[in-house]
Image 1 (cartoon, rainbow, N blue to C red):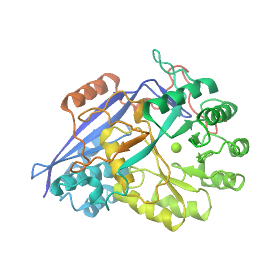
Image 2: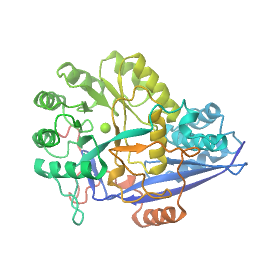
Image 3: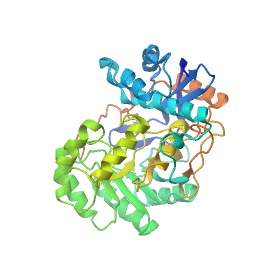
Length: 396
Ligand code: MG
């Protein structure tokens, strides 16, 4: 089998209300690039990547992919991730690998998870992203603990989530602390709760906040401060486990993270860790070093959601619910629209490959919205309600 063509689509999908984070705002919509790898046997593999419009990057890589066998992933990886100095990109490779594994599954008539070891679980629990939101129509506008409790309860009622994560660092730390205790009180001791200011607190603030949160029964503090050194020093001063998707976010970081005792839990990500097979390698490394394993979300649509669910289903040591922003989105580009949450979980698709297909009408609408709204990443930090504002680290 050979790859004979490649198609790309830059798409935008609306979110319910703009999501605030410590370095800016998701401006009411999310941009993804959809990849179609076409084979000489007529099988089409689907991939997806974030980070704005990546269509140009895939077109640059196209000559390196044409003629390759989609089963020969090690060779494709060397050609697209390792050897092109100026466009070396694990994110692009991850999207290509998703598409190749989709092709492999379709060729075998088996779900993608069967290409990577087979599933241990039939459904994967997800975690509600609880962001402070700007108001959009009747939605959003949350700032106070009361607002955030109402919002968390609504997400739990709507999707059945058993855990939630506060995207902190937007408002003063005292507000985040009050929100976390209020959510703990409202949703009870069994509700999984975590907080992520994206490294935006100073080391001193992080130590102080950790001390004040000792009685909140958090699953973990995620990137409370910047960098391996800061995380290692905070970790010495708290009993709350530290997680990261920032300071140990690629294979090159792993040895230093372990040597410095900087983290307890690594949040895997198909795009940071060189694809689905890279996440499998990371899973084994975390197991060997007795580190916890979670899974980070980078605002995925259905193709990546399916890839994440397939991957997660095969990981024996993934003991934390998977992050997601999917519940904020108003549509998807796959047939049937968004995959449903049931009791906070998404079922592992059982069809061949990823088990999801592109919906031509939804894809066309999402491409049109991208043309109207423009590239998301160019405006990633822009906060139109605070003209001229930009993040300074540490923020608190
Ligand atoms: Mg994070």
